Amino acid sequence: MTTENFKAFLSTLDIGNWTVDLQKGVYRDDPIKNSSGDVVSYKRVVACPIPILPTAIMDNVDTGQEKVEISFYKHRRWKSIIVDREQIASNQKIVSLSNKGIEISSASARNMVEFFADIIARNQNAIPYKLSRASMGWYEKDFIPFTDNITFDGEDQFRHIYRAVKSNGTLEEWISYVAELRQNRQMRMMIDASFASPLIQLVGENPFIFHAWGTTSFGKTVGLMVAMSVWGYPAVGALTQTLNMTANAMLKQASFLGNIPFAGDELQIIKNKWAGNFDQLIMSLTEGVDRGRMSYDKINETRSWKCAFITTGEEPAIKSSSGGGAKNRVIEMECREKLIENGNLTASFVKTHYGTAAPVFIDAVTDMNIQAQYAEIFKEIIDTTDTTDKQAGSMALILLADRIVTDIFFKTESPLTVEDVKQYLATDQQVSVAERAYSYICDAIAENINKFNADSSSGVWGIAEGDAVYINKSVLSRLLNEEGYDFEAVRREWGQKGYMKKAPDGKYRWTKYIKSQSFMCFKIVTGDIEQETLFEEDDELPF
Image (cartoon, rainbow, N blue to C red; front, side):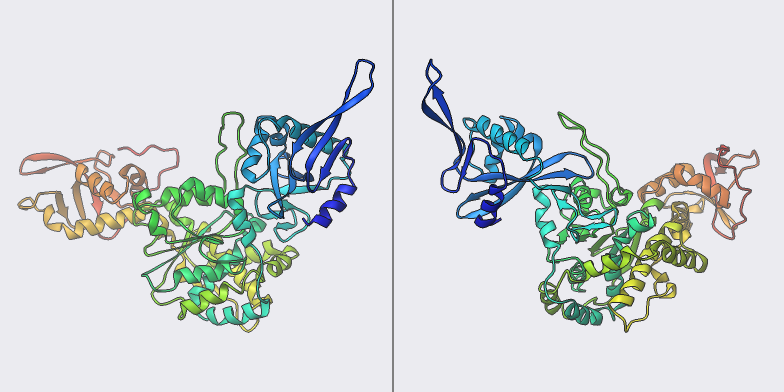
């Protein structure tokens, strides 16, 4: 907004008996009449001592609620803010606009409310009407903010991120520099994960996490900045965030980003908040939807997102005891060598060359048959690896993004193949909690085999017989619990796979004797497995 624009816009409005003056602000002169009805004087009613106008009506496409853009002049500059329609319709609520720099008090609040209501009512066709949204990403075939059809009306706390989605430098310079960085396959995959984020909604997949971990000084933070330079200004605090925030803050930011990737640095910062296990956080982020929340006067709308989460840390996000659901949703990459050789030079480059690739990429994929290409890659992963559907889905998105950006940006490269990336896919066995728990118990038994001797001086856990052990029920539960596993959660699958054998009475609980002392135990096979007959889903195991 400029003074000239303000004057031009004002000239198009019907402002009734109000005056909007650049020096005196907004006021009207109400006539005072005598008993005969003659005007004897005027009383000045001041709405605001600075010039101010409603300059646009915003209609939020997600909620249907209206907001109003207000422009005003103060401290020798023009400023525009967006507020809820109800805020300027209430004498009590409108006073809070003083926090935005608008000169208003409880004494003038009523006049200001009347002014806004009068101007908006008189100028239904003159005040610009805009569709708006509080989040970024896809809306039908438009992608916010790379469209003039949808206006951002989101919360102030995210405006710095919204403003960071911009461009600087040339696309040619960015391609030339980043092409060299992509010679490192792990760096290339991190960049591909960033490009994959807006594809998630197009193919109907769930969000996924791409986590790069390894020792410090490997360039992970700078690598994250390179990945986010696809979208805009990638500095930490702009499009790259430290993960020192609450889970609710992460969900709220993900909802705002919509389809633009969430970049989080240094996952280990919040390790203590989650007792060293990020399963609950992983599941919350990758569900893509947050529950509605009740405030004192309304139920807030449910937040949702379809984006990739690209994170870094000094240790894995997935622990040995993590649930299969969490492990399924994370593509994890251990960095054993530097992602970027010259971190300072690269950080300086992407802070001055950014945001030029994303609009071109979005424009290209809008008219592509994304679903068919995705299905083709997904099928190849499933047919040639022993991974799970969810792992295959996430990796298929990364490979699809790589195929597209290779075609439109990095033409001298060959697209990555399934063979190139299969080492980063968790196998079905690695994802299974029961499999990991069984592997852990076998290791624990092997390490403590002396405790399966009746004459052990360090405590007796049970009896070893051939390729199996009879382990005390309490010991088994304790060992699993110490590592974060729950026996109740794995025992059905252990029974189905023959890892645990039934007693002659058809139950899995055995009674054995050590020196005439009976104890309750389970028979765990530690040698070759002969699989039991599978139980139907509804059958109850005879424990």
